[in-house]
Image (cartoon, rainbow over all chains, first blue to last red; front, side, top):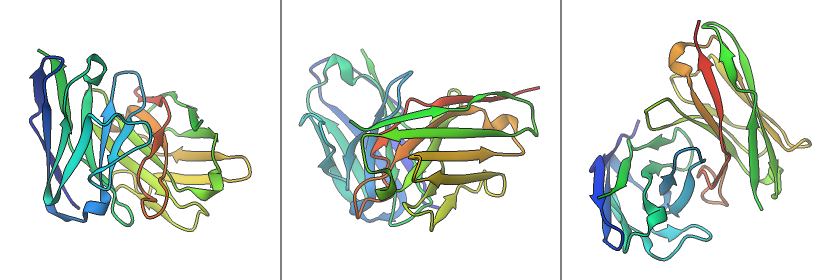
Amino acid sequence: EIVLTQSPGTLSLSPGERATLSCRTSQSVSSSYLAWYQHKPGQGPRLLIYGASSRATGIPDRFSGSGSGTDFTLTISRLEPEDFAVYYCQQYGSSPPLTFGGGTKVEIK
Amino acid sequence: EVQLVESGGGLVKPGGSLRLSCAASGFTFSGYSMSWVRQAPGKGLEWVSSISSSSSYMYYADSVKGRFTISRDNAKKSLFLQLNSLRAEDTAVYYCARGGDAPDRWLQAYWGQGTLVTVSS
């Protein structure tokens, strides 16, 4: 099973600042199958990025994904108040099993 | 608009059973794989199970294999998860999610709001 490790666990930033979230995998993952999700309390998660760098429908361009192999990054160029949430990376492969990282909480400083 | 609405959660005793349902609308249900993902209190997301569009393939996390069964009814645009032999560690919010377009079939492109399952005596 591929293990995904996200860092940092918590990121304390102010609105307008840049957020950089890391996701490392225990073995190489095809960039085609790496996704990022945003999760707020009381809501279902929302897909942000798939294929490591493709934005999902309706996702603002301040969200961007990059990386390959075992190192992937989600960048939020300028934090808006609605961006404070927990973010998960996921490898979803050409077939299950699927695995999620442990999450990074982006909180208001 | 894609909508996924879960139901069937509740309080159940250890060893008991429960059947979760997910009603889908706003897309061609029979054209997409579907999944269940859960979140235990204070924990992160955990993939539980997935099923292909025509029910030809079903996959399970090791933690639920042999106890949970995923199924779907394309005519009724519904996804199900039968939970048997429930344990305290199965307590979680269970989310229904729709797959992506090929080749991202196993992506969770859209999610429901979740239904809470509590296993306690």
